[in-house]
Length: 560
Ligand code: C2O
Ligand code: CU
Ligand code: CU
Image 1 (tube, helix red, strand yellow):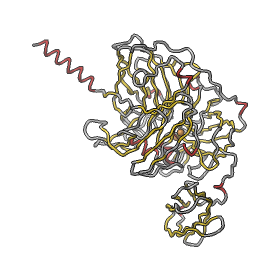
Image 2 (cartoon, protein in one colour; image 1 turned 30 degrees about the vertical axis):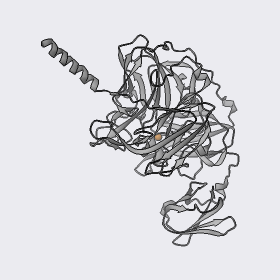
Image 3 (cartoon, helix red, strand yellow; image 1 turned 45 degrees about the vertical axis):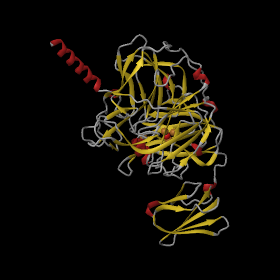
Image 4 (cartoon, helix red, strand yellow; image 1 turned 135 degrees about the horizontal axis):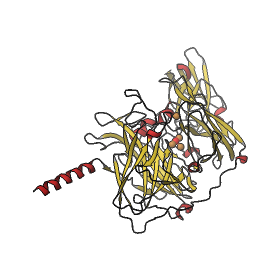
């Protein structure tokens, strides 16, 4: 009897320990060349008790992992069933600006957007996420997004773990704040770590070399990755492909938008366990997630400047043909020599006293505007971008269209684990990062690509700029430009948005064709709005807005 009681107690104790973890969710995969993605408002059982209102792609939170092969032409059908406009951006992809899914490719509710392009990226982990101007945080927070694994011949020839979910585990890292009813609270920082959407996640991995593909999908936080036993692990990729050789480390900090693939050798450790952790107590207060906010401060959160678990790993039996060694080399990358650059652009990151809710951070000393183009990059230019930060805080800087190579950080060569192809670079406070990139293949003097801070709250406030790649830098957008009036998208398909600076109220809109004929008239009353111009034929038009004093503002736009 006594023995039985003890056994029951022991069982309960073990069951109790077990209950503190939830099984890791591994997103389904989609492969082939046609991909159907449906974005929905839905709900998910994340905590015990009430379900949480979420957004999901082909599911209830987050989305499937897309498997793409370099060289394939992929066709995407993105169906928006949200009761709101959205966009889907293919983060890290080299593709035509029109297919990029940035703020200029909105997907109206209940419509389908079908971009396609040829995969040109190296094998690595990429991702897709919403990118609607001023709505990135809100839609990302709902859980909209997903991972992308690109495969290529170079990577496939290596003895690396690549059985999805078994020895090759995709991990999207984020954190959320919940209210008393288990609903997400809009916040830069959450109190609960979420790994693939699961709080207190655990997973069983085989006792062999395991590959973890980590994506920082957080709103703001960086994660200083390491293991509870401080074991060495091996960095094998940067954002845009394999490094020349694995780099042994015990810590690796990923920042918002950034990815890294690591190998961890668990050979012979069957029956043990280890935690994948964020050692964020080691980060200084100028790194997102390293701040030590006093309790009650607006951004205070349970994970700030703390160490916490990302994933509890149970190590089980090895698979039938395990990888048991870390390869000595991976591939031979050829980076652009600094001498091949024909231009240097200086991009500034600074703190500003102005902002909608107080002081904010700016790129190039101004807020993002849909129709301001910062740079006209000639096609095939190799350029150095010098990102000069005078900000008192660190920011993950991201650029669309290209993968770049870091030349130096405050004059010093990048560490070995960053010496690869990248599309996000963490720019610490008061630091200058120089990178080199080549802008090839796709020219379009109207459709811009973005560059921005990947902290969603900063991006939404306007810490973003844009550039076009093309050989006719003037572009048709500049035929008539009135700086007090913003028009987008341009070219327009059906609905034209206008926005007047400084709250100028306009009362009348006239659309004029290139022959000077008035082809449409609208009466208005406000400083911003939408005009349905879908009945007009394709071509160049002028929109003339008139205010209450009879002052006119003219800008050209293209109907496509
Ligand atoms: Cu991942 Cu412009 O974004
Ligand atoms: Cu991107
Ligand atoms: Cu920022």
